[in-house]
Length: 322
Image 1 (cartoon, rainbow, N blue to C red):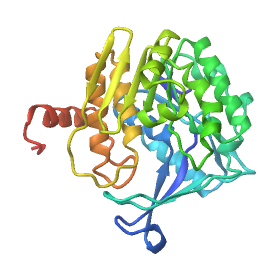
Image 2 (cartoon, rainbow, N blue to C red; image 1 turned 120 degrees about the vertical axis):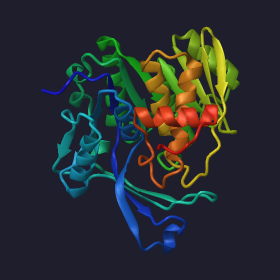
Image 3 (cartoon, rainbow, N blue to C red; image 1 turned 180 degrees about the vertical axis):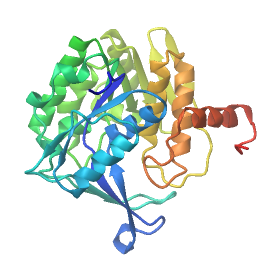
């Protein structure tokens, strides 16, 4: 029997083919295989920081699906509620990697196993005992059945006594802005913890200022609204007030995965009942470690690594672990 999780995440995990660093996708001939997925990235980050984490989702009965599950398990993530679909494939993402120019991302997810998740596949037992459910806007945008399953998860989290953490994670290749407003806007309004980009908030709430949108969500019951700003700083707004954290200055190898890493660090701080300012600091440090590596998860730290990084970033201590 699997352990009771602290955190449950639900979403699409895909096979990732990452081109050799610096080479545009159309000219790349060498690729490194790993896995990608906003929710699985957050799950890996939380698991490495010592939190018992469970992943809910679907993969195909294919080599890519088996690789996804093996990688999740290697990070200590519970996959006992994962569904393996013998009639659909595991989604795939192919991208290049550049520190200073636009990254080209191609998705091959139409008809994937993940897009076939249904409300009947998610039950209260999967969330029993959890303190937190984390989802993003990508999952409900994949299909009508995944939308219904996500809405059911929100209901089940309330029944289980778990807080809901929600990141819109807007990807316009998945659907137009109007569709994101229709599907994701209402879910964001139901979350206990909102982690959104400044640009995402403007897209989802075009008829009000970001400040008004934050006030509305707090009045509706959100415990915290975190906004990732265009200048790479992040602000946390609660009923008690607001605080802001600048990004730590590091050499960037690949910016993809920074938002998921930030979410993992912040949520770990929230689970540890740190003050919002400290949770933001953890999020910024985790993101700074991830962007120095050329994929979404290699830079995710364990607890000791995060503490060393925080000392280095905030107290100008020696960075070498001797």
